[in-house]
Image (tube, rainbow, N blue to C red):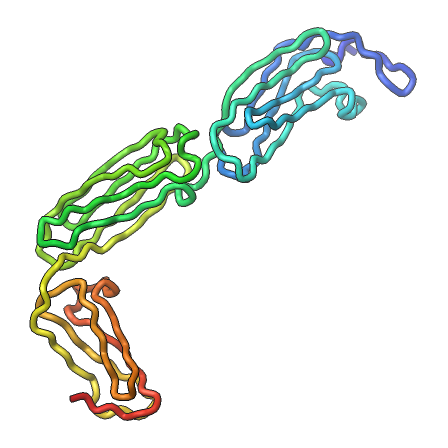
Length: 291
């Protein structure tokens, strides 16, 4: 029969003798052009005809792979028109150029391209929010710090920030150098608290963050109440307290047994649900009667 591949190869004892026939209609394809670390990249070469074909791939990070028809089991692959090579980049991230060569001693076919290995956004994009706690309007700075992988990837990064209820901002960064770039948001809010939600994403992943911004106010009119006035040992009771105005407040409760407990208004995220902060206290050795 007419064998369209490995033309010119004849059996010679336990091996083959091959007249070199140039590779015809060669191609080289990768399984993906965008990967995350530890993904497996498969490179597939194909050809219409040729004898004793060799196939190699070299990457710009000095890694290379090779396949040789004569050493890859020529008996089982006598009519094979393709071959596959696989590589895992591990922790390496960035844009890697590669060269694919398919051919033999009679001549080579060659192509070049690139792939991007990009970590999850949470691995190289850091979000933070800073502000000066002065009366409205508050000036809020959102910081986006690129720390790993970003200079060598062309994936655009988009972010959306909303400060409830009034302000929002869209932004997009492509090939941002390592470092910090800031987006400034200004908003006016009558409440002592404002919530900021930030979402950033690229083609592979996304991250979200939420921040509470607290308006600076002077403390006035402390209110305090205990759920019980007589408490058995090892029982828990609640203390309820609030201020008419004030923010960045730390409440410290000094108990009769010498212990203290404290809570800050920054720890309470449901301020609009309840105007009061609560603290659970367990008395271990003494009975406390608040005065």
